[in-house]
Image 1 (cartoon, rainbow, N blue to C red):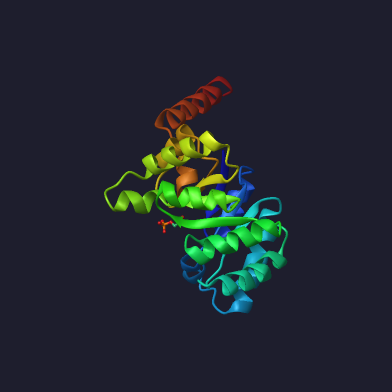
Image 2: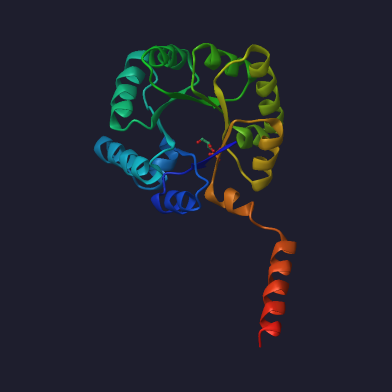
Length: 219
Ligand code: G3P
């Protein structure tokens, strides 16, 4: 399972990358705004900075346009920035048309704002590289986000769709574990959810004991 970090914060991206377990980054317009990155020039330059930190991993950069021509125009500019850019496109009619266009041009895509198995089928048919079902936001509505992942895993396996299931809107470390059990290809998470995987009280207690025994024995 690939680990992506879901942020536009360069310090967090560096911290995740330094762990040696990072496979990529996803951003969205809200995450860019949160970092105060505004204006096309600054936004594009920020994506390049992210790509330079991650080096090998895919970096999703989202379009703002919602019409086919606009999505294609923006996507081509984004894809030109760096070989690792993945053009992130919303799950709408013109988005699917644009994903088909990008697929045919050999440009990687991430179909975002996915909330149903039907939407997942459309994105796979258009050849999306990644599909982003939003687990946490489904949970927020009282439905089961993990069930959505499980349904998509089953459907994609039935037909050998190559689109990678990129579980997004991850809210906890447990979401990551549940995604791994369900067979998601990628999880994109806040850094805190990745760091939460380290935690176990018995690890802390055991390490303290080892160090204390070592110290006593070597006094
Ligand atoms: O990048 C999209 C997704 O991960 C957003 O998550 O927490 O805003 O629902 P969230």
